Amino acid sequence: MIATVTPNPSLDRTVAVHTLHRGEVHRARARLDPGGKGVNVARVLAAAGHPTTALLPSGGPEGAHLSALLRREQVPVAEVPVRGATRSNLTVVEGDGTTTKLNEPGAALDPSEARELVGRAARLAEGADWLATCGSLPADAPDGLHADLVEAGRRVGARTAVDTSGPALERAVEARPDLVKPNHDELAALVGRPLPTLGSVLEVVHGLRERGVGAALVSLGADGALLVEEGGAWHAHGPAPAVLSTVGAGDALLAGFLGAGGSGPQALRSAVAHGTAAVGLPGSRMPAPHDLHPETVHVTTVDTALTLTGAAP
Image (cartoon, rainbow, N blue to C red):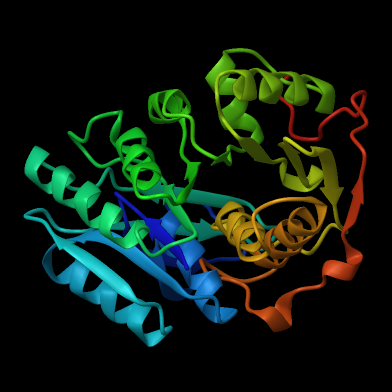
């Protein structure tokens, strides 16, 4: 069983327009999906028949609506009631795939609510193979909340995965999770310098492992993903799909990796197949098994000289 924790879930409304023009009236198509990184991981796992539970704080009519949408997708939900309302996010996707996101910060999570979230996570982790804690933190939540969740999972014997950014990622690294899943930009921000090549990314990941992180799965956008663990390092990439929405692609990638065992080149192949499928789907829709084409994903040794497409200058 793979339990996910999303400290800052959301209702995600996606609006599709041909081209976004500021100050003008547009005709648009819209859809509403459950949102939040851990929520999306659980959605992918549930669609594939993997046992999972999505743990999240829930407040107001928005929280009730989010839980109802998840149950409609047959995702088991564990809710921690909170005083603030669950946030709503807006994503505008243009015809060429350009994505503009307007994310609310999320309602404050007070200390008692944060403690309850960690306690519920520990109880879920007792019967889980993995505890994955994912996403941004709501207002007033401590930077160390993901680290607290890692430690709670470790105490009951679950493997732990973290997907977050900024100070929360730095604190989570200190807790020595079994897996971190930053994207290229988040990893560059963590070390405060550009990472223009695959070799520069590999060097940073080796540094994280020296600090006690078990493994790293780094999503690289159009360049696929890099996996570094005790058994070796591999790079995987697939054909470039027609991009409908990049929202949730990294979450799908993590779900594909954990659902395929969470280790080794075949799990990396599954991860990239999931991430590739996600960008070809509208809004925050997550891929199901029939959307996947793992046979098109190539897994190779790491070419350290490879220049990364999305690297900052």
